[in-house]
Image 1 (cartoon, rainbow, N blue to C red):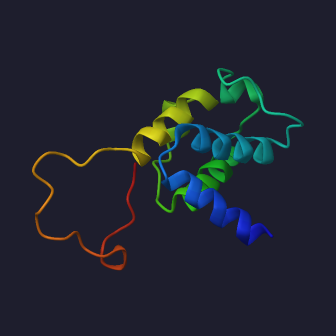
Image 2 (image 1 turned 45 degrees about the horizontal axis):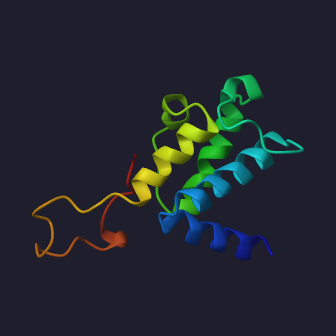
Length: 117
């Protein structure tokens, strides 16, 4: 069951839908902090009790859901559920920069290092 949940969250995280991404982030935060319900979207993570250890756990779960690596300071730079969700949605839906279409194909995932955001 957990594997199916990981897969469905990964699909949601990659489709770029901000609402689905926010739900994935919310579920991860609730699980990591063992909360009974989702916190206010604008509550600071530190005020919710997110320690550095729990922040690492949250970031690792999001990395699995998004299938990419994130900067260790991402949660400090985006310290609320709303800001983090918006940031991740912007990454998932980032448009291709002008001039990149039609260029040589990007290297395969196996041949390039993990992406840090």
